[in-house]
Amino acid sequence: MRRLFLVVPALLLSAMILVPVMVQGQEEPSFIGSWIGAAYRGYDPFYDATVYAYGENTKAILSITISADSTHQLNVSSVRITFDWTDGVYNGSYADEVISPENILIIPKGEKRIVGIEVDVPSTSVASNLYLHSYTILVEHLNATSPPTETQSITETKYDFAVYSADQADARDLYARVQTVRGPTVNFTSSRAKMLVYKAQNETSTGNMTYTHGDFAGAETHYEAALTLYNSAYAAEETFSVTDEDLSVNATKVEIQLDEARIKQVESWASMVFSVGTTLTLFGVTTILFGIGYILKQLAALKKAGQQTTTTTT
Image 1: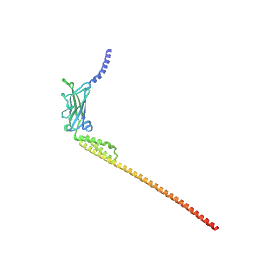
Image 2: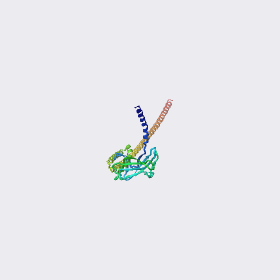
Image 3: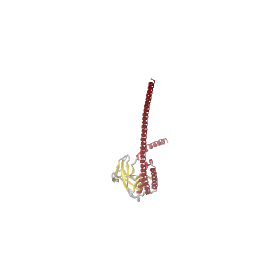
Image 4: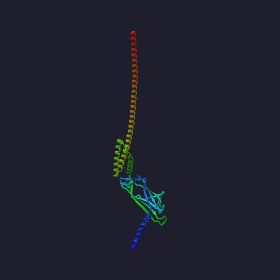
């Protein structure tokens, strides 16, 4: 019994040591797919999901980054993508060469390669724009480069591919433009510009509701109206700013003119005061001289009268 107690902990300890090794040995090759040149990528309120969207009758490109594990080279024999519509299978290529069992892509251990697949996006009569489409990416690889070989595969299925009608694509493009121009309008000061912005916001909200209901042509019309109103708001704000600047400049000019008039008035008063002071000074000097003359005249008269009195007495 004591031996059993000794063996069980030993087995548990061995398991704890071996588990990480087993997990490490399970490393497998992998891939990551990324859509390039989408007409729109992001949240779409009509589908209520994040999508990769392309216009109908266009081309889509899927870039697939394939990684070999750190212990084995990867012998890729096929890279394919299939959609839920009936256009067949699209094959991937590396360096302009289609990958196949006869044209294997060898990826050294621990390295990566990028494979591209070009997809012909059909019309909405083939791939409806009223729902999202699923697609499956398949990467096949061989365990050896010469017979006998065994094929293994890695797959991934997603449900985020949208095919836009012409109206739907135009509506999303117009909405993006509306979002670009609306930002700076929050700082507008002109009353007319603010009113135009308010109307543009109403048109945008109506366009959003219309788009969500699937009326893409109607949404396009409302987004166009919103864009026109925002442009008019910019023009109104510019006119208001220029007029306000002119008024400010004119007010400054008036202030300068008033200051100049005040200076001239002060100078005029100063000149008048100086003139009056000079006149008063001259008047004072004249008065003094007149007084002196009067006194001298009186003294001469008194002197003459005294002389006459002396003569008479004699």
